Amino acid sequence: MGLLRGVARTAVVAGTATAVSNRVSRRQANRWAAQDPYQQAYAEPAPQPVAAPAPPAADDVFAQLERLGRLRDDGVLTDAEFSAQKAKLLAG
Image 1 (cartoon, rainbow, N blue to C red):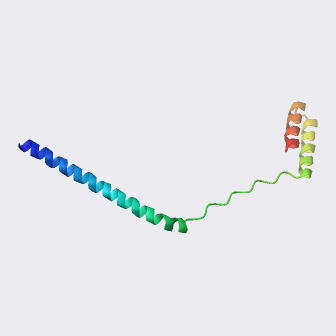
Image 2 (cartoon, one colour; image 1 turned 135 degrees about the vertical axis):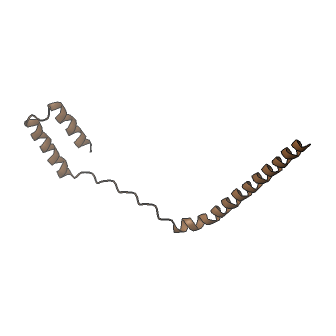
Image 3 (tube, helix red, strand yellow; image 1 turned 90 degrees about the horizontal axis):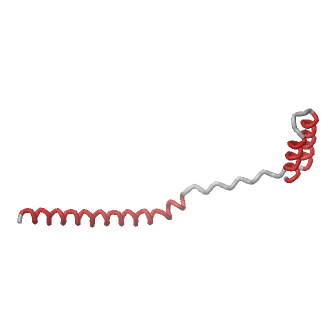
């Protein structure tokens, strides 16, 4: 009979511990939920999105095309490389 009494006592203690733990968890969750509106009110604002860079000006495109032409004329770029870069610049 002593063994059953020990097992029963252990079951009661374990059940009580679980109930208390669950109650504490619920209480903490309720406190955090109640604090959330206050935290949102004092939270740092979200960073503003960074504006996209402006497309290159037409003068800039012409300057880059002239530079590419000089590189091709100097033998730094092949005709195929020049054409590929020129297409990229003109596509925007």
